[in-house]
Length: 234
Image (tube, rainbow, N blue to C red; front, side):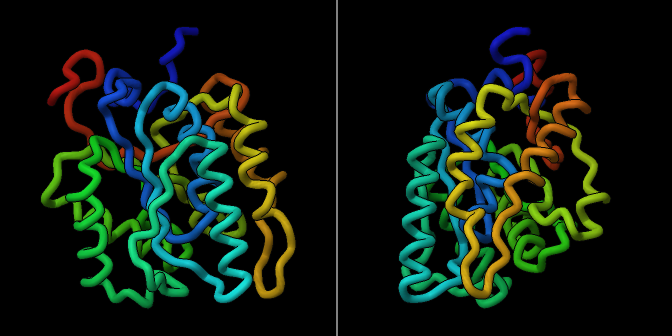
């Protein structure tokens, strides 16, 4: 198997080039690690700049400080640049209002100028995730970037069974690093259900089986410029 065989379709020749930038836009700290942690680490190791923007912070006080610290640690482990788009982050994405949310992502797109964007699927069962996915899609009206949706993070929702991925990234060599980045989020905290690390690994294992490898992360191609290696520039 070649080194770049399992890159997302249509970006294989582009995403492993140092001049390329991937922007990951997520509603909450831990969303990127759950659905795309291995992919982010693999891109970073290939010399791709990865910026992850977290739109909300669902805790205050000491809890918020701990969550920021855990996310900063995950960013260091996986190799991405952590971006908090606002100093006064709301507790939930819905607090932005859709117009202000799109404007926030417009500014991110202008500042970072990504070639590829990963974000929540618009059909995600979590309201904040769906709002984020819709806002990113709206913001891309002014930018020429490929768009991939990440899988729903919550396996208990109907949306999980409705998500039909079209792109798989082999993360077999990144399972341990992904689990290490997620570990702080698997701890119990008052008022929050911890991330189920076993469920995350089983999902990656399932997607690996679908794509002919041990572990994979799955994405839905929403928009692509070009025809992969055959016509990469579109």
